Structure formats: structure tokens, C-alpha cells
Length: 101
Image 1 (spheres, rainbow, N blue to C red):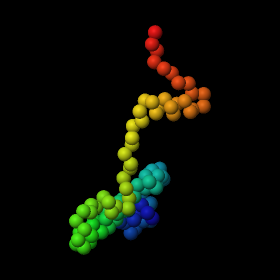
Image 2 (cartoon, one colour):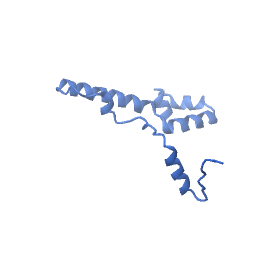
Image 3 (cartoon, one colour):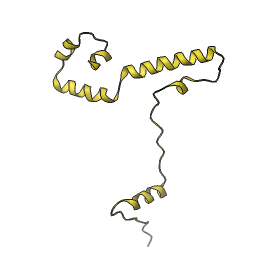
Image 4 (cartoon, helix red, strand yellow):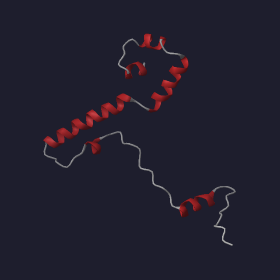
């Protein structure tokens, strides 16, 4: 039913009858992590909240600040020393130094 709702189809039984079982399984796995309507609703409501706040007099507000669904955090690349320290903690890990004559 969620798949039919995402595609705005009220005839979910017909939609299911047109899909193969492997296609349905693939869609189920995809939609368990990615919802179209959640992102759309979040964008609409955060824009509405920003508009109301701007009309109320708050000029320093952005839509991203009011979003409930935040994007992926930026990945910070570890330094070589941090990677070596992490490697020492692994079971059976050996720290290798540079081969200098």
C-alpha cells in the first residue's frame, strides 16, 4: 500500500498485479530507506514555517534550519596518525612503519 501511495495510485491491487515478485521485493527494499513523500512534506512544512517566521519579523531564518529531516552529516577524513591508532586496536593488528633502509 505504501508503494501505491507514493505513486498516488488508489488502485493498489491492480498495481500489485502488474508487478513481478522480484520487482516488488526491490521496491520494498528501496522504499524501506527512501520515502518520496517524507522529503516533500518536510520541504513544504519547513518552507511554510520559514514564511511565517519571516512575516512575524525574524529575518535571519533559513529553510534548512527548520527542516526536520537533515541530510547526511559530512564525513570527516581521518588523518594517517588516527588510522594507525585505530589499526593498533584491532585484534592481531600490527603497526607497520615505513621501510627505511
